[in-house]
Length: 215
Image 1 (cartoon, helix red, strand yellow):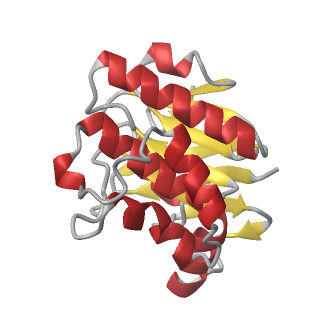
Image 2: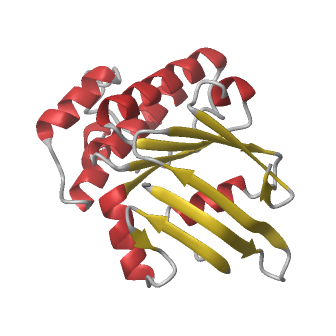
Image 3: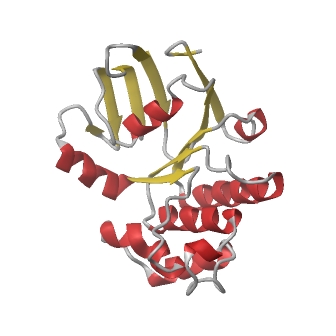
């Protein structure tokens, strides 16, 4: 099992619980949609799975490594080796060109591969945009760059937080098609947070978070 979330608990500052004994599993190559109302803890759970934050109880095991014993440096090293993230807000580096953004995470992970990056650029329709800067791109183009940057490192787990939330219907469908095709071709697992039942229905599995529990 690539990702195991076992009875995880997490409270907001002040003690208000947001996750109560949440359990999930995700195997290599599987895709899982996580839905729930705003404030239900979807993004919190995603951040915990990404080793971006600590939890209060339970355990998360990623690629055979338990997260709770790790310090900040250990969690960062595990993220570099196994995880990539795609966010609603794109989070591209504005001072870097499209081509430089594409290779950024792969360089950090020590897995830069010019041939693979070139394939990604072509598949994502970015080959003619490599020297441009993010501010000159449409929202759909920026999200395609973000997906390419995430996949250039060949992650075992791709985590996506409302990746089509800022896009119109056509761009949203295109971005989702590309993301699903890339994770299928590389064997990566995908955990995707979404409000859309249509998007959730296109993934292998669907979990709903409500009242701090998986319903």
